[in-house]
Picture 1 (tube, helix red, strand yellow):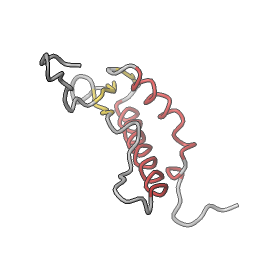
Picture 2 (cartoon, rainbow, N blue to C red):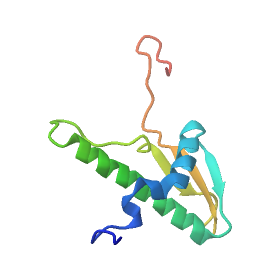
Picture 3 (cartoon, rainbow, N blue to C red):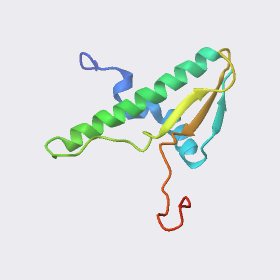
Length: 111
C-alpha cells in the first residue's frame, strides 16, 4: 500500500503520541523540565510538539468550516516551550503563557 501523494507521517496524530503525553503532563504541571541527551534531540522534540499543535489546529479548522465566528484552537495554545539555560542546553521547559490576570473589581485582588 502506498501513501497518498503529498502526505507524511506528520499528517497523523498517531505519530505524536509521545509528544502529546509530555504536553498533557506540562498542562497539569506548568514549569515541567524535559531533559534530552543532546540539544539536537531537544530541538527535534520541540519542533514536533509545535507540528502536533498545528496539526490539531488544522483538524479543528476542518471541523469548524462553515461555522461563522469560530476560530480553531487547541488545548495546547497557551503552552510555550523554551530551552533552560544557555544556547547549549538540552533541557526543554514547558510553561503556560501569562497573558493576564483576572481581578475582582470590588477588592482589586486577583481571582
